[in-house]
Image (cartoon, rainbow, N blue to C red; front, top):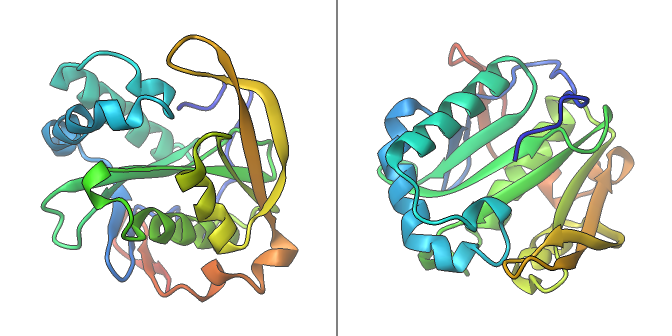
Length: 218
């Protein structure tokens, strides 16, 4: 999920956000103390996530592997390279999933990724997280475009950008490797800054806070 060494995320004009509070979620940067809870969430959902997420195709990993991911993610966020977050309930008692703003689409854009535990699907949590990060991307990072990519067969994931008003730009042919080692097609959805002004994410209510806990959005 890391950005290539040739890419760097747009530097936020405020922030970046270390914590985002929405109506039903706490979206915040990972902490090393989350490692065991993250491992538990991933281990319980490997079969569900494996068809769609390359990093979920391995066997169950030790907690040290999850800790290394958390430390790496936090370092990249601190350096304004990539912005990866955990998705929690408001009381932060459980890892519900993960999301992030990734520097994969050039210097003027960010790509949103997301996953939610299977038992929380169908309740709009992934849509809520993606909406919040869309708002953060345009208002904190002031990007020109936001991307969401998903496998052509992943209809549930594709409904999220569609509901939020993203445009389907096309299909990237033979772009992602499936669990069988074959190349599958990938859908590309985008929203540009001119479209954001009239979009659903612009109206979402949230509060975002920087590394010192100061409110920077909302």
